[in-house]
Length: 349
Image (cartoon, rainbow, N blue to C red; front, side, top):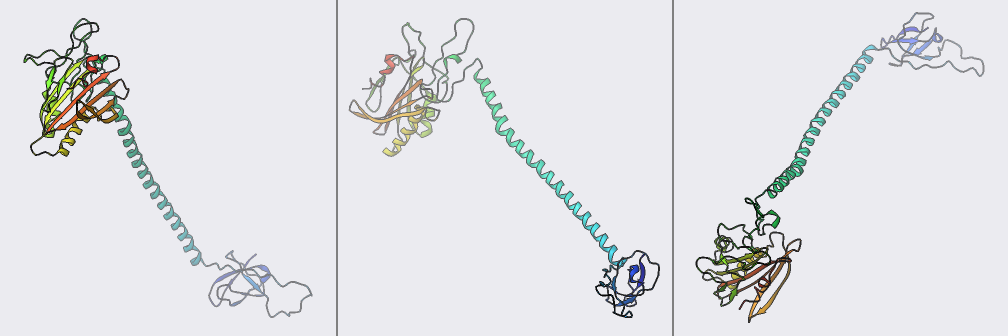
């Protein structure tokens, strides 16, 4: 049973073991020697370090170990209680910080997921909706010509009863869509005639251009004001665009005049821009050949382009002479091209 002892120096309450009765112990707080009474009741307040009393003679039995020293823990309530409160407060503070961090992390995660979902929707679902709408539009009864291309035969519009109409090729091998007036008349296999109908003004299949060249179409061509605006006016040029079409084939002639004072370099730039549109290079066609050829004593810049599926090809000849631009172009298909269309460029004189 522990013996209660009070340090006379620092008034600390100590608990000494029974073996320290009648001896002196050292106060662990102030290192003062304190006398331990013989049999004093004590509460469990701590431990003391036992120091042998000098009153006893040092003569001990040989080999007998000295009395064990016990480390004293001072039972000071003022030192222990604040420490426990501080640890509890620190633990609560750490818990609150952890909770706040988790809440902020959750909010940031929700925001990131929302942004990622929005990007995914706009990139995939919106594009898919646009593709579905475009597909539905292309599958409608009325065919819409693609930019710079021709209306596919399987998209011809059915009007009333009877066999489906064969679509008229709008604008030959150039971009721009269907003109409001005019157009070539299709022919059937084995039938006669063909080409564009003869206009009321008596247009003939042969056109004499300002550069002195004569072009003969397979049939009477027509003037296209809409294509003239598209190809010429936007470049500040004046002139005419002649078109002839039959089934899947078409012939085009562009004659234009450069503005007064234009240089030869400017003329070449305008010609390059027009010929790119005629060759459909900006609408999926790929350039296959480009070279310079001599025909009838003239040097022409020749371009050959083909559609992605290589079912159509466009051949264009161009030259610039005395402030005048001359471009002749023909678009042919593998299965529907007549000999007259194939000879269109060769017949330039």
